[in-house]
Length: 204
Image 1: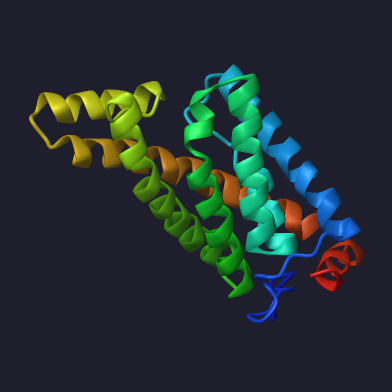
Image 2: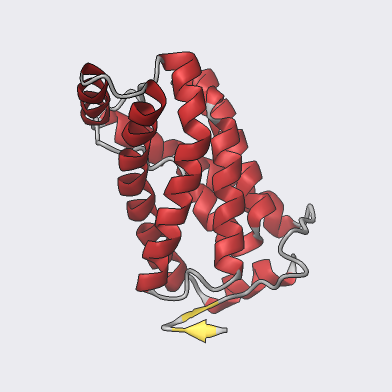
């Protein structure tokens, strides 16, 4: 399926397969590096978003949900061991993001700008649902992003249930982060040479 310049290169039968081909072995470390640098960049500038799933998106789009999930998981572990121990806790969230991105891409939901937006909302919802219990268990419901945590504090101050407040805090941040990352990944994918896209497709 090809729509507005993006062709869905996967299919429902092979998107879950992953081979230790040269393509995959090269892609996963590259995706981890993109995640790492993007997240460090966002944290260094104290941006109101994370950006740490960009490489996960690209790996899932190019090589399927398994490659994306592995990339996200490895990045969280490495980032947690080197820059921010908090990151390790959210490895499960990164795995889920990789899976959802890969499935949505495979089903054509990254084929145009409107569909990318819908996909980003679904990815944000997935991330928020998984991250909220982690936020409550480990950080008292907060995310560590000041403006999101200000919203959380306001809701708690108004006697709103901690789970609702924490989910709201997480979800509003995830919407911004996942929409921005989705469109960056969409733009990058559109610029990739067809030969490169076919290379990953042929190795799935």
